[in-house]
Image (cartoon, rainbow, N blue to C red; front, side, top):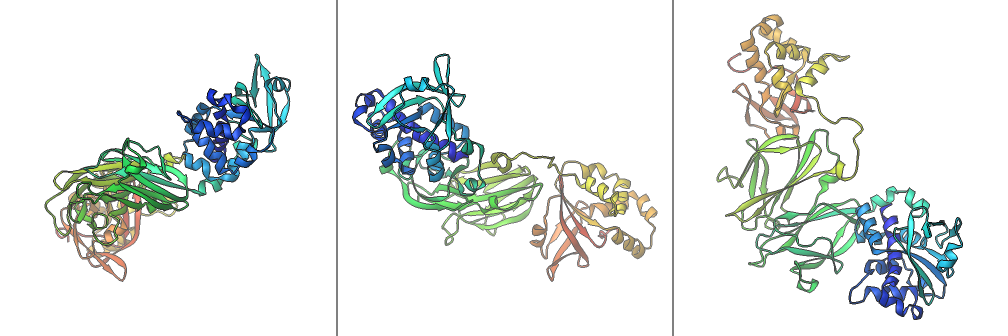
Length: 551
């Protein structure tokens, strides 16, 4: 529907060019199209986009013909208002030529209908070249179309007809009512980032024309811009200059249907390494699990070596290098993580010091997509974070709460379900006074034994459940031996093969991968993974972990 509305405006506004007084003088010697083109090429150009629309819809010849035609032409202000309302770009307007033609022709009536004739049509429906009709009404001495579109200037005559100026865009009934899925499918999304530390603010040119991205300074990232999926000529020039002064491009870039692409200016002007880094953000096309966030980390420091990214004391990303410094690498890496607080450190690859960037307590909210870029220079590094909530951006409205339950809530719910599970675990947590801890804020990983696992442990240890529940010191020691102080999803756990991981008990557990399965302390198998909670994650195990002191 976006395309439909905007396109209509274009043709009309194009004809609007006729409004300009200098154009009106010679109007009777020029066709409707000639008048519009003359206005677009004047000392103070007007209606340039409208002219492009008529050209894109292939209506130049038709509207230059003998006619005669009557064109209801929206003002430039009407055109701008519609673009703002629909939140689109000129490129999006010009892409759907069938829809564009339909909307434009809804502003054209066959015959030369002067103002006096229009007033005589009060209350009538008049057929347009689109085939649909517009309603004409005379109210308080003025002419109103379709109930809310005012005719503000009349009788701008051309050799093949007449133009009446209107203050809004007319929307054909079918076009205004529909927003076809096909229109959305044909779109792509792009955004632009300025990550060159010694480059001035820049303007971006698309297909040879100055785009809406102007004066973009280091270190900035634009919002996502929706454009028709196509190939575009992209160029970047210092702000306030011209396309001829471009320092990047022009270069042809293709954006496929449904794609999300970040175009970042990286490198240095001083050493001639300034270049575009094109980052396909494929995570936007994947379903994001409830309670998770996506984090894209990007290495944009030209004089820095490859780095490792540590998260909560473990390596999450290895050998992240500046774009093009390791073959054809793009310098970016995507992670899907549970929402929560993370301590992040960036260090040279393969080392633990020096810490190039230290980001303790970094918060990632559920449903957000984060772009985290290391920018600047090795001696003066900076971090840029861009957060996008995709659902909000795309206008989606949640029909129910998406807030996840806490770990304690999940255990309680499972224990009271139709097929109860974790009943012994729940009793143990309550007896040890840990319910509030596992219900509160935090980032925990809980290895949760099944009821069957607890029963087997009681038998092996030769004790009764009541005896263990009564010994709160030992119970607390055993329970905290099942908890990590950070979120470790299944994919993270697999990456810990052969390592010892500290628990809240203080004693470590050993993680090993055998035949694709995860085992803790060699004998206890993880049988279900990634039960996500608001404060962490639960993995189900088939045995009870016994800390060294308790055993």
